[in-house]
Length: 321
Image (cartoon, rainbow, N blue to C red; front, side, top):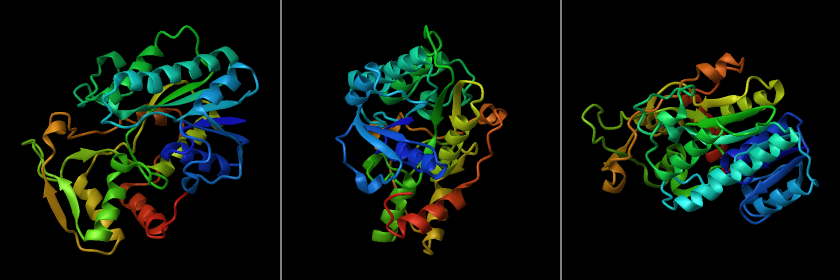
């Protein structure tokens, strides 16, 4: 039995898709939302139960559920959420409860951290840097960093554990995320409805408009790596999950227009002042640690990932992997 939290969200539902393809299961699907919601994004034949967060904690504590793995993707992923108490409860304390249960019962544990812990990148993007060196740009990043720091002094640890710092992930099943959905998804919607794409101008003299850089990673690389961690159980620790190469917003835009067989047409807009001083101009995951474990190299460079996403999912109006 494998428990997956955040099961009706973007990465969680994709993880279940990957586990099912590999013949893993049965799977207990856990989500903060009511059971049965978002079923159009979440279709699997391997689900044995559909639980809420509170039900999960109760059934773990009373011994009814005895999983072989817990893959904890459930979280508040909004980078604009300002309620630190809420983020502490959902992103930090809930993860601590699951970690402690896994430590006590000797269950391997995977949890979602975030590339947001690195802040503006002043201290680099290396997952082996002491996490206390980082200064996130928002409360969401703080909540993820706080748990990463907590693991350093945790009294007990699971037999195998992996904290995964996701960078800019895009791909099928993110349709419900609204403002937090990837720019690839937003670009598809804007281009198909308006014929153009809005991109932020640069307010940094070191970067031209559209040349701000991000590490974009396709969901199919992410889910494959998670499966490899489960299958091979390499050294525990915190690991980046990006593509390992910074690409520009213009690269992303051109690839999306190309996948739609349309001419590039950009509408430049200013970065809103309320987020201008928190805006990241560069991210690039150092992937050396992950690949040193013997995991596979990324298979989906930006252009190939966007073509697959646009052609085989968005343009087909498919709502699941």
